[in-house]
Image 1: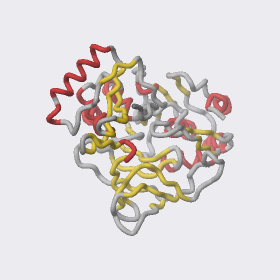
Image 2: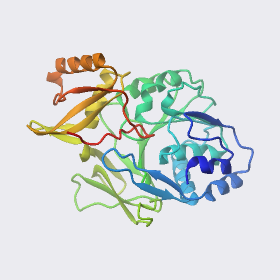
Image 3: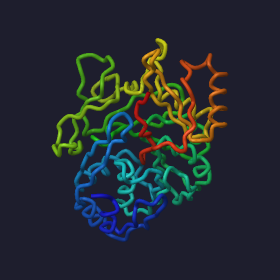
Image 4: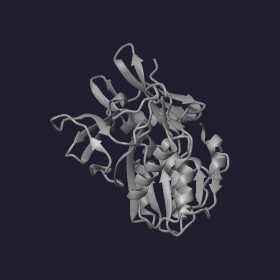
Length: 350
């Protein structure tokens, strides 16, 4: 089922809108938990960034378990929820259900585009990388001591200055996926050095005999039913990690976003972070392409007019000595198709 079909059972509005709110509940804690546990099976889909989107389904009891492990990471005194993440993703669903289970008011402002106010003395702010382009002014007006939770990918450079300007001492990053839910957490990282991730108590790392880079594999009771409708004991993701011990790992990147241009490996995720730091108000994405001369290359798609695209290309040419490689070209497009988590749905092209 979809969230709009489920919403009436939770006293909620239609959730496909870009902005909505839910009032604090007067129901008992037991009744609120029972409402979530009794939800019908809900499907979430992978982003479709590197392959066709896949359906992963969870029962109400599984969603409640996901809420509980997330709440265990957070301070106990949050009194409101402000989420930038649409509920058709697992992360967005859990952000909303946190408020339902705790009986808190919830405000949803997709990607923080609406600049809706953050209320509460101790609000929980739930965000993703793309929302940091619009979130800082809203955070700066927050009167309370916010708890900030970031997920979806590494924190962008723009988040560091925004966090420094808030009154919060509590900012966390979450590591997870539609397939298996929340895996690990760490304090928010805004500098060049990156702390390792610590897995949750109900998650077990399944790894090889050494600490070399490997795709992350986990056991967890919260793994969803896959596209074939079957439950799995072990889940393997496309994220590469270096396992430090039984509870910690270092994230090494996603190999499906690496291209080799003229012998140099280029991490397109890192290149996009660089672009967003130089052009913070322009939506753009790096796209791997098949190149007749070099085999692999990449292009930059810019959601702007051709003059802006030409200006971006000229700036990148001026930065050539500081870049691992230059894009084959910069392409102006009407818009960039993104999932609700802000991940692009553009696949490899020629």
